[in-house]
Amino acid sequence: MLQSPVFLLVVAVGPWLVRAVGERWRPHLIAALSLAVLVAVDPSTLAAVALAGLVFVQASPRQWHAVGAIVALLALRPLRAAAEAGLMGALAVGVPLGVSYVGFRVLSVELDRRRGIAVPSDPARSLAWITFFPIWSAGPIERYDTWEKGLAQPSTTDDYVAGWQRVFVGLAKKALVVELGLFAAAAWVRDGRTFDAFSTPEAWAYVALIFLGGWLDFSAYSDVAIGAGRAFGFRISENFNWPIVATNLPEFWRRWHMTLMAFCQRSIYMPAIAWTRSPYLASFATFGLMGLWHGPSWNWLAWGLYHATGMTLYVALSRTWSTRRWPWLTGRSKMAVGWLATMAFLLGASALGGTSDDGLAAGLTLLARMWGG
Image: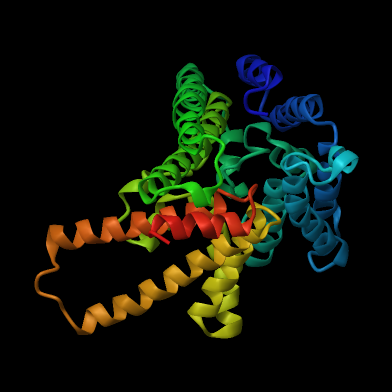
């Protein structure tokens, strides 16, 4: 969607139209422009918009149809992944684009409403926020109270120029670095072979390429979304902050897909902590659901449980570290060891998640080949 000519045309023209109308009509125009883009790219998105609308017309936040709409929107994410993987045949056309992210938005509204945080105050603002096309298909996951600030004033020329600069960076990163660089190199390393034919160096090279490719691919989409939002005068939250420099897993997740992690911490981890009184169970619940959200496959479930296991081990080792020091492992040496261990762990996760099209057995084979198995 973010590379669609319709998307880019509306990003080019839309901000000037929004600047020409008063604040009262700004949400209406943003909603109209967003709906035009969404329908042009994928008409089935109207189904997701209709489901999301149930949340905002309800008389009470406790009515069951709101809960049903939220569950339906979030459940459609794995269906969309199955459709993209060619597993649904003709039924794939009925699965709307971007359903997972709009599901996050409507769930966020319900949670914020219960917590007394600002939520959309009228139908026009609700529709503009739900359908805001720059962040519809790939995030970042934006809260309404932060997004709403962009409605207060139209974009400036500086916003427009800065936004398009970010869009160009994202498009160039996607085309040149990811597709022609990293993913092409990964395909060259694999050369059509099964993973059991890989040597250990080849396995490490392959997972490193798909890890870097996955990061830069997603960050490229975030660049385009953030830049498009900036062109309209909205300051969309950043999604990545150089995760490859992380020296431990918690730091990595503070740098990687930051809006998703913040949402999951607020909406899954903290409630699970309150319910189970166990940070370990809460971690497994959070990462397990995150894995299934990525796709309906055993690979992604294994990816989530792998990360949860890593976080659990890190917490346990951190407690050991606080009571039993290793004098030789301090300062820069500690940071170097931490970085190497973190990157090795993350590449192992990529062996599972990055091979979802090949199946769990293939992912486990690649993981074993990394360690000489």
